[in-house]
Amino acid sequence: MMSVATPLSEVIRSAFTETYGAAPTAIARAPGRINLIGEHTDYNEGYVLPAALQQAVYIAGKRRDDNLVRVHSLDYRVDVQFSLDDLKAPDQHEVSLYPRGAAWIMREEGHLLSGMDLAIVSDVPSGAGLSSSAAMGLAMLEVICALSHITLSPTSKALLSVQIEHRFVGVRTGMMDQLISALGQADHAILIDCRTMQTTAVPLPLNVSWLILDTTKRRELTNTEYGLRRSQCERAAHLFGVRALRDVTPALLADAQAMMPEVLMKRAKHVVYENIRTLEMVDALQTGDMILAGRLLNASHASLRDLFEVSLHELDVMADLAQRTPGCYGARMMGGGFGGSVLALVPRDQAESISTTIAAQYKAATGLTPITYVGHASAGCSLIE
Image 1: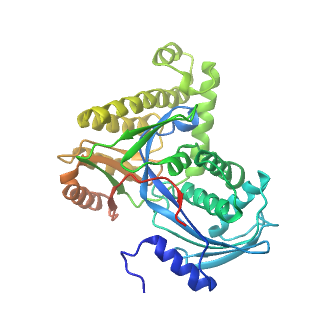
Image 2: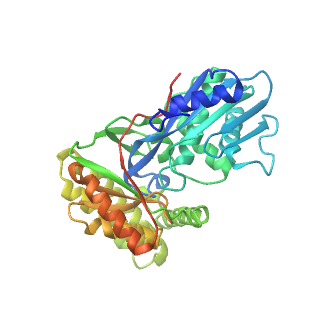
């Protein structure tokens, strides 16, 4: 029996060999992410400031000589299979969704694929706002490229992973999750300009920690509400006469106050000022101004709650408790909304005590037992072997 401390790369190698009777020829890793700030700005061609996490999806694979793909999932404890000739067949197990989506998009791009034996394991919590789905799609593309001898840049893989979501899964995500999973750097956040895809590595101060406070409240109506928010932003941009809300300034907001429908104005205000906060956060981190960084986090949460309206009672309770805890610089909900996690910035030497305090207060307030841990910035996706 594997030790708890056994690296997941070894866990998946052993599981693959036991399942298929031979060692894998490729093992891919793609990390989840935290987003320091810049929420719902990516699909508005704005700025985001995420970091790749140490938690990741691992996929071991070996090429087959037919069109059959077999998937062994350690997390779901199931074995499923499908044919490359029938990737959109209905009523297939959810474990096969991203393997099928990755194979489908690669074939749409004109690549020749053969069947595969796969084993999958992940320690990225599902539904916690840490982008487990993006990591799964990217890890699948990584292992497909290795087994089929296809060479793609990390950015190309990230953009193809976005297309899996848009064209196969049917969710119109932005590109942040996939880009940071592909391009992450250890001990750095990455400022991403989602219009130009220009990236800038931002060193993270070593005297602070980023607490991930998982409310354990899983998402409600995320896909429906996410799509609605996106369409509202597109309508607002059209009324402003610009390509995307990235192009709207505070002055334009003020001029349009009287003519813009209230709900569209609220969405636009969030995006405009969230972009500004994201660039200010880069300056705060580079100068070590954690007081300012905390204020920016708090302002981001208030905007997501009041203007973009994607928060939830449990997220608000967790963020409020964190913001009130002595020592905590600031906190905000993270991810698409309607459930998931709160991100809190705290002094590194107080991370454990602050985490314990917040967790106890949250359980008392909601009856839910949260999951808390420190987020460590890691490297992006890679082929382990």
